[in-house]
Each structure stands twice: as structure tokens, then as C-alpha cells.
Amino acid sequence: MMSALPASLARRLRQAAEGARRRKLRSAGVVRNALPDLESSAAATRHVAIIGAGLSGVCAAHLLRQAGQRVTVLEARDQPGGRTLTLREGFADGVYADAGAARIADIHYRALAWIEHFGLSLEPMYPDSGHLISERDGRPVPGVDLARLSSHDIHHILTGHMPWEAQWSASRSIRHLVRNSFVKPVWYRIKGGMDCLPCAFADRLDGAIRYGAPVTAIKQDSAGVDVHFQASGVEQRLRADFVVCAAPYTALRAIRISPALPADKRGIIVQSRSESATRVFLQLRDRAWLSPYWSGYGVTPDKWEIWQSSFASTRRCLFAVYVQGKAAVPFAALGPEARIATATARLEGLFPGIRENCETAVQVCWDENPWSFGAQQIGELPLDVGTRVEGRLHFAGSHTSASGWMEGALESGYRVASEILGRGSG
Image: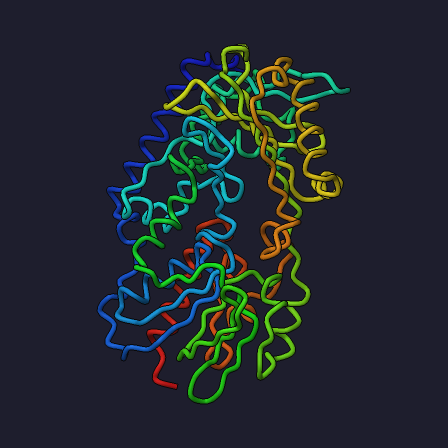
């Protein structure tokens, strides 16, 4: 039985593994081949209305535009991205916070392909040094040294998929570490904010997106589809050949659709539920007060994830508390200021000095978002019904993909673009 690996050796093994995985992806052409080739479509030019400028909607719009189609994207919010949301207002010196989608794995080939295509950069989601922190009886408990873990291990500790005490022990062998590092996903985030990806799509749509335009009704007939929406408080209508519903089912419930959808499709729309989720972000003056011993990452027994982000442009740093699922329900019941106060007090107990160093705090509760009423969809709904084309209506979004994540949203964007380009005129 072998003793624990030195942290320096474990770190070098992990870095070598991550480099090998990236080289393998590129040399195999996986990233390049993940981009769809729809530009050669011979389909006649049709007008496609897309409901929602989330990642699936702008991806589908971009692909259809590249294939010579006319597109109009109707978005209720005032920016693209949907639940891929990066906050910049309220922070200083280039500090930003990812309030929605925050992680990309190196097995998310479509996401990697588009990131490379648009010239965006990735950075590690998780640190490679310092200790995780947990909590017992309201007091901080030192956790494992991150230098000894793969990115996959850290991800599963924080998301609660593996028992804390099983993550590291002296009996862990080099074989186990290498297998974990080479086989299991490495996690990244987009440098500059996760919304850089949907914004890159939106920038290439040349004014095809109408913001502040919530859709109220869809009426299809044998020749086309009328889409009714609000703009500046006035009811407006556009005529399209096809419609892509790229909004969450929870938002789709508020749209009148006629003729009515089949009963099984209506059923999954009504039954769909979104996960409760809240994030609180604290901007701190610097990281100097935090002992190098701590990574700034951790998880509490009641499943509060804790993240820390540093920025090249400033000494300031950002601490985030992420609560999702059942653990977030009582937290979401609090008011905005109470959520910030609760999170700050909890972090102060784990990292004494946070309250004194905190300059500003921002919170996002997805349960209160009027266009999604929560974060990602929870529960399994039949994908064959969810993705089924209904007359001239097509359906996209991560909730219509088995992949989930940003990867699933992109996958669905490609699927609906292919569906529409493969159709005749009817």
C-alpha cells in the first residue's frame, strides 16, 4: 500500500494529464469537426422566428443565417444569453460574476468548438493548490489539498456527488490518480465571463435580435406562423415560415399557442419544473487577508458551494456562494438583503475577515426570474415528445437535449437548424 503522493508530484501529473487531453482533442480533429457544416444547404430562403436569445436560440439563428435563411430573434430580456448570465454592473476594476452557467467540461465538444471558433479563451474552473473548506457545528473544517486531486474530483466534491471523506486517503495510488486525471473530465470557464459565448453569436447576427420583446401568442396555419409580441408596450406581430421555441418550458406556459399543441406535448410543458438556485457574490478588497492555506473553495454540509475568483486587472477578488436544489428553497424564501446578510455571516464564520474586507455584494435568485422561474429543468421528461416538431413549430434549449449544460443548448440549436433546412416549403 502506497503513502499519499507529494502535492508537487500530484500537481505535475494533473497538469500533464490536462495538457495531453487538450492535445488529443485537437489532434483528433474533434473540436474542428464539432462545428456543423450547414452553409451548403440548397434550401430556399425562408423567414424563421426564434423565441429566446439564450444560447440555443442564438446558435440556431447563427447557423440558419449562415445557411442563407432570414431570422428574427425575439428576446424578452435586454441582453442575449438567457441563463448564461454574467454580471458586471455593481463591481469594480473589471470584476465580474457568472450568475448562471459557470462550467464547461473538456468533453463538451460543441462548446469547445465554438469557443475556439470565436477566439475566446478558457481558464481552469478550479484551483490547483490550497485546501478546500467545509463546516462542522458552524466551525470551519480543513479539507483536502487540491494539489492532490483532479479537476473531476474537485467538481464532484463541490457538487456533492461523492462523499467528502472518500475523496482522498493515504491509500490512494498513483494508478488511481492517473486514471482519474486522464479519463475524467477537466472543468473550465470562459475567461472574461461565460456570456462571451452567446454574445459572440449575437454580435454576428447584425441586428436580427429584438430585445425587450416578450412573445405573447403563436398562431400557425397551413401557410405560415403569426408571432405576437410586446415591444415598448405595444402589441406587434410578425409573419414567419417557421418558429423555433427556444425558451424554457416554464416560460412557454405563458404563450398562447393555436391550434393547441397535442396533449402529450402540453403535458410535459405543464409538468416541467425548474431547479431553485441562488448565488450571492461578495467583492473583496484583496485576497491578502486569506491565508495561502485556503483555496477559497469549499462546500458546507447543507450543500452550499463556495467559489473564489481572482482577476489579472485588480487586487480585488470575488467570493461566491452557490445554493441550488432543495438546499436553495429556504434560502430563496428570504428577501434579497436577507440572502446577502445570511451568506456573509456564513462566510465570515468560515473565513474570518470577509465581512471587514467586503466592498459590495450582489445576489441573483433564479426563482424570481420572470422568464425562467428557476434554473435548469429538473426531472426527466420524454425527449422524443419534447423535440418533436409540431407543424411549423420546432423546439430547442438544453431541456430538449440529453446532454444538458451549455453543450446541450448548442446541440439543440444545431438540431433545429438541421430540421428547418431539411424541410420543404410546407
